[in-house]
Image (cartoon, rainbow, N blue to C red):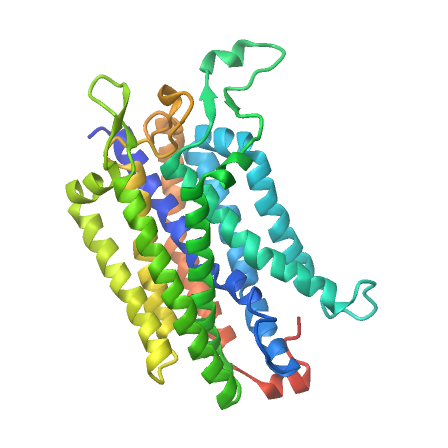
Length: 380
């Protein structure tokens, strides 16, 4: 393996870690989608909003860093997916902007639209943010409608390397495999939101009972849909680059990738066990720590999925219309110099992670109670 190949693999792993962090942090969106589900007091609803309000910026920031890391390390993907399927990505971005506005202005005195309007914005982000992100990630397995012609850069009037279908990403929503993944991500977010509320909110016994019921219902639906999606993934014909550099179709590619790279298969299975253990802990025991089992498991599963999507000469963004335009980590990465320079910067990532852990613990110390709402502290 050459130095360039090692750096490409290293940066793909960093992308996978950031992607996994986003999926874990989507419990914020999942919680927003639950604010008006069932009967609950205004105090409990405000506790939920305050609890999520302490964490929403972490999700948004991680999403931005994810996009930035892709731009720096795999710029051709950035220009192809973010630049070509822009209606899909703009829809995601708009939903997150609505979220930011909601937490900023929801309870500000004198706002013209009232709290209810901003609650609707939170619901929009809670549902569409999760589903559309899942759809976007689904294109990394099930492909998109695009063509890459590098000589287009020489055209003075339209110097664009990649050209997407006229629908510019919206066609991915019509792909049932991608949409299924979006629903899976949404149900996972709701499950982890229920676990997070159990961990972070100290309300009455009825609130805890409702959250444990939510863990069970959402968790079962998520588990069933996830199994269906994994079966679909393993039966999918993926695209891979052969020894001659030609993109070819490979039946059951992702299943073969797991079997060839058995370490990632172990990570996947361990992650699944941890997620199920977290759901069981939240639904059937008095434990409040199911979110950590489920969260660690989610991170392991997502990282392993990114691994089988990009490693082993796999096309991590297949083109369904022009197969030879499919992207791999080798044909879409930055130069050796750029990857090497950024690798030094990446050494600071553990420091950032430790800081996030420290801040998280400080914000979560003792949990939120009804007294916090009564005193008007940490209001969103």
